[in-house]
Image (cartoon, rainbow, N blue to C red; front, side):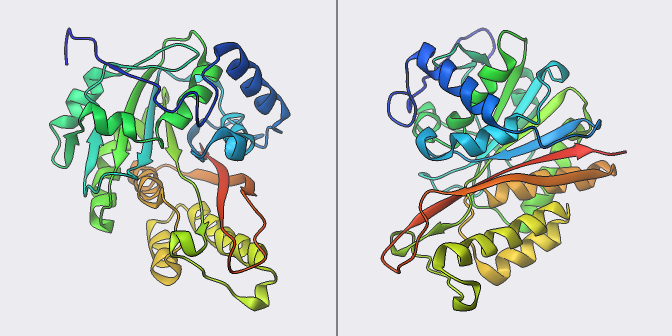
Length: 296
């Protein structure tokens, strides 16, 4: 990787979000200006959770996550998202040195990538796999927008279908970066994917209409995540099997928090759904935004 420039193209620009820099910058500015800053504390925000659907569906929610971030505080972003198209049972690191966005490039922290590649369980992904996946790319416009021309390096990690033991191991490996006050973790995840097309139609009639039942299901996930307890999150998924695609990146972040030995406050600040489903033939995807800040 050293000495060789290799760019990951913004392959979803022009479809999942606009490829026009001026339009994109204006749109992101409006979303961020419209998002209320829910984090009022003084502790350093260590990670955020935000969605990764097309911006027409989820940018409003994503803006609430990034509104919690003070861009002057960081020099590195560890961006974790799930693998949607390739089945892997490990964490995959990029071969690229640059990630392109319509707003300008983000430089990859190749030193940290090479360091992680020496740790058991980390492997590299091919560039075609990297460019096919959307979960990482959909956060890049927000990251570039808030950081602007600041020197901030990117560590993209695509997380496969991993076990609880692996979540713990990866979390322990990444704990040194969670301790680092100049590193922000950005965790990419949508919440419930509901409907026959997703193979998931959980519904409790006593919870109200279908979309209300979905929200209550998602709120229980948020409650578990806010506890900063990996077991609470694992128990929730064992019980519900909710289709939260970023469950493993979220669990890695929580395990990293726990491994630091520090205290954190984690709060969800926004929630939305692509559709308010009222019939079994409908479908929706849920979106949520959260922050986790150091309290001691």
